[in-house]
Length: 355
Ligand code: GDD
Ligand code: MN
Image 1 (cartoon, protein in one colour):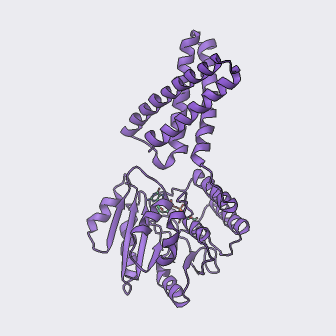
Image 2: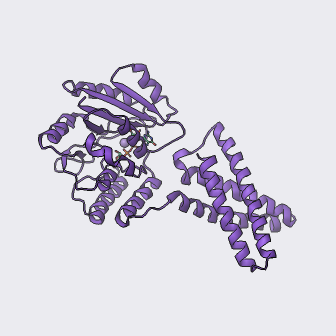
Image 3: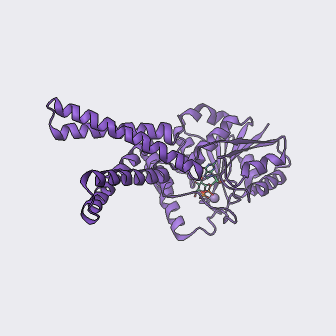
């Protein structure tokens, strides 16, 4: 087979079928397969695709997992074609240039051909001002920081030789949206890259999933690649949320004691519960946004979080009071107890609550 097309989807029921038809038309001379990687979209994207029931279309449904890059990686693992095309489902990428991309890759024996918004003749169509600015800065950062010279290193639309990407699949970070950049930076040699310009179209249906956390993840990816270290971003976020939780705790404690006249122990209890609620909500929205719980699962997750963090609190109390009774100074005993219980909370949140 010549071409495998990997399409990550999240809530693209209004677009995916149209995309499949368009690709089928434009690739009438190419032996291809389509691999849709869907993160169990609530809008039934996966079901719609499986109803097509075509032998050249596979669908991977991932449960309890989110992420564009990691979805693409799973798709590539499944691919059988000589080349792999990665493309969005939302019709913003111009399927019309795929034959040209393929011809360029084969004709010049390149490793990667990028569908490029910033090469001569390309464009971003109706990007909002903010989005164009973010995109421009992100692109120039990649080029300055890492010394890349392609016009659109952040494109989500590209063809790569499968033999080229397979050996590096394991070293890809799988975080965020920047799978192409990750592929380019993870390979040992410099890949031979070509670009074909196109105009990024406006999304007509469904919503973009790009958000500020993804932009942050991108900056972290650049830092990691530049200085070859790895930041456990979720750990940093968890600790920031925890610090914020301390503020919530103190504010509620203040209110309960001085405004509502609770006695200390009840005020402290209410404050603890409130801080846990704030921690749960923020971690659910930001730290573990790739496995956010909503609906029924939300309550179950909250309950687990409360139980595990209460255990964390007991660990904190027993360690710190023990250390204190051995003559360790109060601040050190308190600090160590807190660090150990925070680590416990983080690990159990990651492994149990937002697994
Ligand atoms: N499986 C899966 N899981 N797919 C996802 C997820 C996810 O968590 N998030 C997004 N997708 C799918 C979308 O359904 C769509 O098919 C594609 O990935 C792109 O998502 P968009 O949310 O439409 O991204 P965008 O248009 O804002 O960003 C595009 O342009 C960027 C450059 O400006 C993408 O092509 C990016 O890859 C690209 O970097
Ligand atoms: Mn899009």
